[in-house]
Image 1: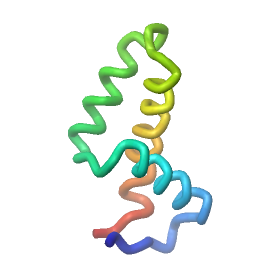
Image 2: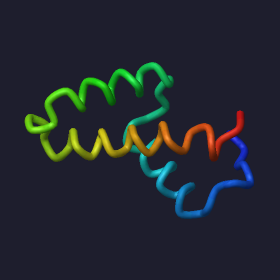
Image 3: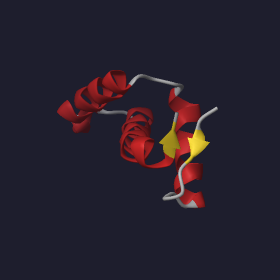
Length: 69
């Protein structure tokens, strides 16, 4: 289990946990490619894909800030 760094709030931790539960444990390159693909034509995204894009952005933003392996 990853340890929590001191620079994270409880809200950020909850958002990260919720996003990871939806997407699963993905490698960073997978998340970056998913973000790139979902941002190409956002008008064509379904609501589920928009939520996935939001989760990917959350994970990429908070991954290095809140988690230490």
